[in-house]
Length: 220
Image (cartoon, rainbow, N blue to C red; front, side, top):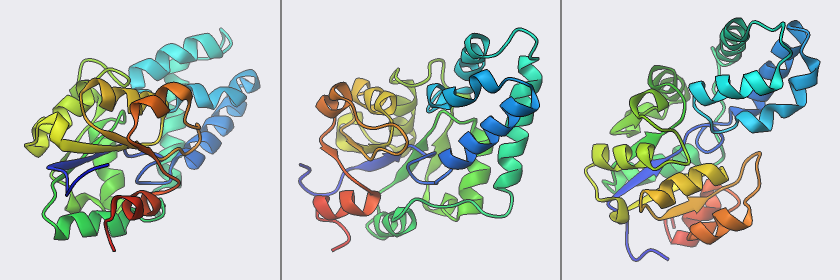
């Protein structure tokens, strides 16, 4: 367990800070039906935590040949953003933790597979962006999670050595990305449970951000 506060906190976004995976899955299913691709509707879990190029590659294995993949991708993302236009739901404890870390002068960076401009928009709508040093999106790095690129870039942006920072992740592949970057990581599973490999790479698996903060001795 950590002794004292980390030099920086590096957050994943979807399913960790903002509660968007349910919206993403619902709009994905709707788009599958609109494109007569019901056969792919139950495979959303394969897309979680993947950057846009990886998702498009997965579409090729999921969708019938007659589906225009570029159009499908565009319409899914438009439907997703429309659903969140007026309200971006937060995960429990997200704002309280960001506020507490800000009050204790701990720099925060979001490291997300989502495109940077989209991530920044969602974080602004959710009321979290002002707490952050910045956002490193999937379009800023060569390799997505589970490669370490996002977390190496996020630690650099935060001005911290990877080993002195702390990451929060929900997916096993996100955990492995932080671990590969040398960043200690806490997993808070959302739609995908922790597996044996990710558990071995984490310092803690928690039920929520509030649970993690409590077990770290924060926000007391």
